[in-house]
Every structure is written in C-alpha cells, then in structure tokens.
Length: 206
Picture 1 (cartoon, rainbow, N blue to C red):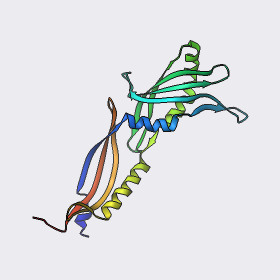
Picture 2 (cartoon, rainbow, N blue to C red):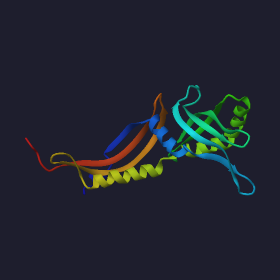
Picture 3 (tube, rainbow, N blue to C red):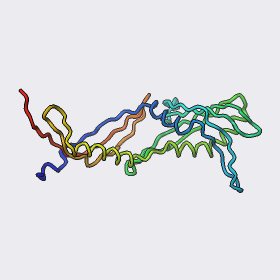
Picture 4 (cartoon, rainbow, N blue to C red):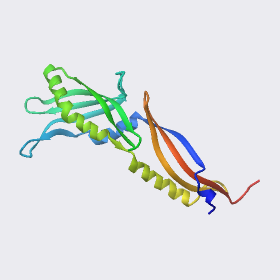
C-alpha cells in the first residue's frame, strides 16, 4: 500500500455522552447486596452494613460533581436491621496520562432517625464504606479503549461497505480520553482520535 495511505489523515475530537442512569446501573450491579465490614486480628470478617439501594445524581453541593445515594441496613448486634441513608458527594478526578477516572474528593452525609447512628455511620463510612466506593468507582479506561480499538480495526481491516459499491478501510492508531465534564444528567467524555482511512469505490451507480 502507498505510504501516503498509511499516514494519519483523520483527526477527530469526538464528544461521547454517558447518562448517570447508565453509570448507576453499573454501580447497582457492583454494590446491591454487598455486605461491608472488616477483618479482625484473628482473620474473622465482621460485617457492619448491607447495601439495599443505590442511586446516582448530580450533586447539589457546589464543590462536588455527583452524589451517590446509598440505602443501608445495619448488621451489628447493637443496631440490628436499622435502615439508614448515606449520601456521598463526590468530586471526580481524571488522569489523562494514565487514562483513569477516580474519586478526587468526597463528603459524607448520613440520615436516620437516630443521632447516634448518624454519627457512628459517618465515622464508619469515612473508613470502610468510602474505601469500598472509591475502589468501585475507579475506572481504568486503557483496557476498554484497547478492546474497542481491536473491534474497530478488525472491521476496518475487512473493508466496511458504507454504501452500495463503496468500502471504507484503514486503521485507528490512537484513541484517548482528553477531558471529563460532569453535567446535570450525564458525563460528557471528550475523545481524541487519530487514524488513517480511505474509500475504495468498486461501483458507481447513476
């Protein structure tokens, strides 16, 4: 193939919208029914709460991006089967070089009918629950990008028929996220794409 045809001749900045409802569904699969606790010195795990409900919305707090609402059931002997609400206000961070979305800052807000539970829950949440949420919400984009690049380039390698008698082929060389913008109901993810491609006209219909 001519060298010119292998040089990047396509450069795109492509915005991608991801609804909070989509992200909420992912977190529900990861967290619903999860029992959260810690291991003692003898290796015995003691669970403190179970996650009954998960929802994700834009944060009403000015310094945060999104809020994760958790409905929890207590599992301790002292507070057995008490249901409490915990709101985690989250500021998202993005490392462009590592292509990782992470929890940068957070603030906890507990709600129940018992002042002592609220304060105990907040102290507990600042250790175990926050770490659990931080791990669940950390998203390494590199393997997902690599997988999608493979799928796209396999299709382009076989020549995609874009219209009768017209075929597109080429290769996407780079695809990376350059910015994450939290909105009212979705995340706007800006992609930078560099590729080469050409159209092969096999038939002209008049």
